[in-house]
Image 1 (tube, helix red, strand yellow):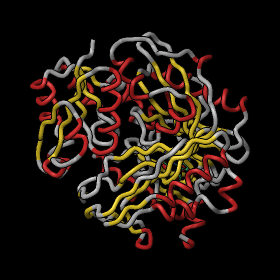
Image 2: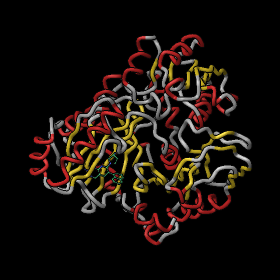
Image 3: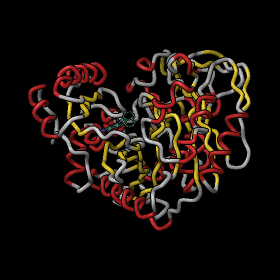
Image 4: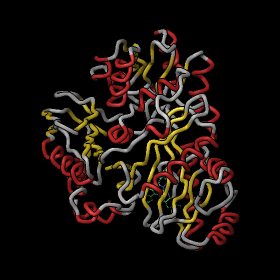
Amino acid sequence: MIKKILIANRGEIALRIIRALRELGIASVVVYSEADRETLPVMLADEAICIGAAPAKESYLRMDRILSAAIASGADAIHPGFGFLSENSRFSSLCSKCGLIFIGPSAEVIAKLGDKAAARECMKQAGVPIIPGSDGAVMDVREGLAKAEAIGYPVMIKASAGGGGKGMRIAYGPEDFAANYESAAAEAEKAFGNGELYLEKYLSSARHIEVQILGDTFGQVIHLGERDCSVQRRHQKLIEEAPAFGISEEMREAMGSCAVRAAKAAGYTGAGTVEFLLAPDGQYYFMEMNTRIQVEHGITELVTGVDLIQEQIRIADGRPLSKRQEEIRIAGHAFECRINAEDVKNGFRPVPGVIEELHLPGGNGVRIDTALYPGCRISPYYDSMLAKIMTWGETREAARMRMLGALDELVIEGVPTTAEALGALMTTEEFIRGGVDTGYVDRSENSL
Ligand code: MV4
């Protein structure tokens, strides 16, 4: 039985995990960098261990130090949160070798789904619809050009080791294929040490819909409905909602069981997310599967009542899922706004600083996940996300109005934030109507 868990993360997600552990009666250990000495996770965890200097490469990405801290503190398991080592198959495997439980899928499953070209093949075999494209990776520009011709332009050039938009280019015709191919390969090589690429038909005006799944070690897999994450800027999500507007119960069931089929095909255990592109014609296609808990998991919790972090721990502890598919109900509607320390007028440039004034909204149907406190320092070393504001309402409109109220009430001084821009994005006619596609932010940007 798991009695103590080491949290290999920082900020609001570390705090989120500490709270789940407290409810489960499991002891918490956090690791932290020198820049994070004076943060809430360090103060609120049962134990805290400094693992190095501020740069992530010297702390949150140091597998050796994190594993040593876990062994020294007597932890049974490691929760990686998101980002950092959360989708690193080598880290999952090293945990096992050290006799520690990695809270996430096995190293083999992470590796298989991390190779996006291989994941596509796996899904194709399982009968999950994939976007027409190259079968597997392409070897060079020549082969790519031939494949692109067969697929039909525009084509999307994607990195096998990518995901989340890195190493991704669109080629509109044979004349701009080679240049895009080379720059995608160079970007992928630099970011992942692997320049391998594959091709897909480019689907424009699509929506980004993702399905939350949970799989236990007894082979049971359930889905918890979908989230619409179409409101993104340069592949950074700004606003998410659950459920997706305009998706019928039949469609939800079809996408949900498709996600379950995808997870079963991969031998998935733990919490995971299957990303789909939903085309304007109503067709949906598998894009990739994320093998971690996601930033936006809270809105699924708001509409299902399931604690996804607690489920992750249950699964890692070898226990069955706490609910069967028939017991999952989607109730009401939820939004999430990611509040970042960024200068919107300056291309959303991250701005570090000190929080001089702070008022967090609250009230019925408002959830805030944050590690902010008055006087805390926002370091330039990590992600610029300060807080996630989530609101729940019986209807989409009630949840939207609640969010506008919460954004209005929010006071953060000391750094610029994205709060006002998010409010503007949620107030347009197009957004109020619902079902915006992934081009929405670009179309709106000059009015932010
Ligand atoms: C696509 C696509 C359209 N066609 N692939 C973005 C992140 C990664 N998960 C895959 N992504 C996309 N893949 C094909 N074949 C559209 C996206 C996409 C997107 C593209 C441009 C601008 C914003 C976007 C937001 C979400 C998804």
